[in-house]
Image (cartoon, rainbow, N blue to C red; front, side):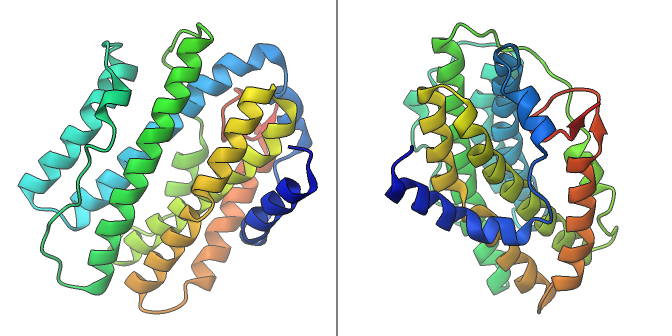
Length: 257
């Protein structure tokens, strides 16, 4: 990780993310997250976050694009992963591999077609990363437990407008902010972790660095033009959530209280 070419590559990936977010992760959060006793909880919450990212993509498809049959198909893609984490069923996640095919659905607009392509790809990647985190937890004999959700995503959604199509625009911007913050934290955490996890978090940064831009592009297409004003409004909310006190450590929590 300390080689100059790798550091340069990481900085290149992070530059647009840092330009997009209004504030970096506070050092106080990193200090708490870096404690060895915090690692199991952080990894478990990270596992939940990967699944939630896939579920959020699926929800956008089901709400705005898919008919009943296709929506049911998408729910079936998620089911084995939900069985593994929520119902603790023995599931061979590796065997699922690339079982998510290209969705063949009728779309009426260019943004709908792009939304299908981008969200299906995002689901594939997030579920693959879920599998990777799941296997790390198993290898380290960390029992997967239920954890309460942080206030982060719900706090952002409370500021989304309440009627479509502008509600969809805000949801896409919020998706961009969550993806960008995740990548920023992958990079910020990596130097504090053991070699295996450090390499893994850098690999996640490489894989997911473009996700926030995909969401922003979709927001602009749905909006029919720039979304600068709405990005600024929601980015301010995001920065406040990250820099104000939280009572529980989570992957997207704020400053430890």
